[in-house]
Image 1 (cartoon, rainbow, N blue to C red):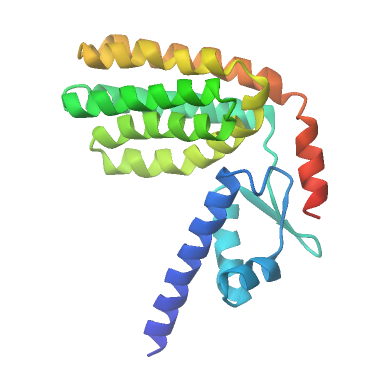
Image 2: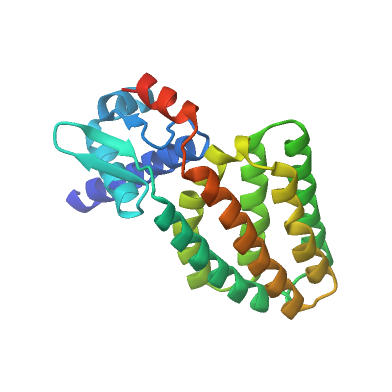
Length: 231
């Protein structure tokens, strides 16, 4: 019985973690925003214990930080951390590309094209969140097609960190340009040219990373406003 209770609590904690992770990615909890255990527990109809465990897991992923008497907040990463994350993602996805190109089906290539189309539509609609979601789906599809479970697991640890950052700075970035970075990657996949796909992906991360990093040096005013509203 004790084992069943522990398993049930662990499953509930995972569900709370997924809920909070989605809220962070959606921008409901921006970097610097406070996450109140009692409020989350009340919203989800659960006790504080699984919320606390979920926050510990998110802290281990580097998305949340906790302090005595101050509770939990979404971490505001430094430019150095973001630069490092982009370098690691570039290397991981380059490996995924080499594995994915020989396995890619025509349907999956069209799926990538669809996500690129969504990025461009979101840019036209001035929807930074939708563009970040489509961007994540584009890259996630490449990692998934690689078929390497370990690679997928490591990539998933970095993706929320990067997507939260991209969502926040995208309103001030050239979003059409960010979307266009993906076209050479898609073209290389369609021609089944792994070397060209890797080169296009690495160029994408180099240029986009530098562009977004420049914007991150001065956080947008909305960050301070949203953080204050959630305290």
